Image 1: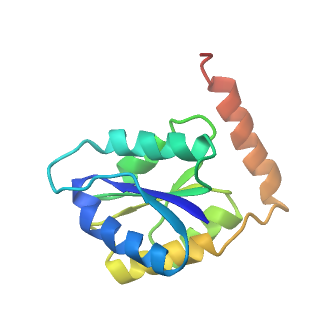
Image 2: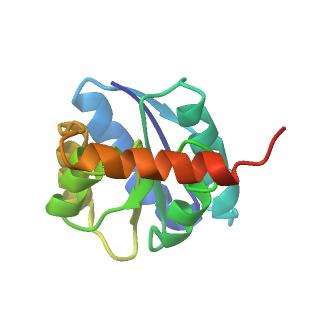
Length: 151
């Protein structure tokens, strides 16, 4: 699977662990930054990854900051993106199965490396189940379309 991964300076170490883990699992992974521990604003990374996923360059994206909250908020501002903050295996699975989330976010200050690997694996191995979730995801898509600004 083609996966884009990015973080702010708080998430750098965890991003590097997940990048290596995803590569070991055979995924085609692109590191979208940051690359050094100097402070960077997370919206810049979130927007870049979300635009690349929305544009079809990547099937999925992983974003890491201190809590995962800011990355989720920013990524969800990009039209067509459904980003979910995950913190346990169940939420990671449901992000894909129920919400068809193309991006997950997590916090390096609240999730350790081993749990983060489990979250990414659970999410990537899950697919949108459709069923009762399909009309809800369609409603999300319609809300997105309704408030999308032209141009």
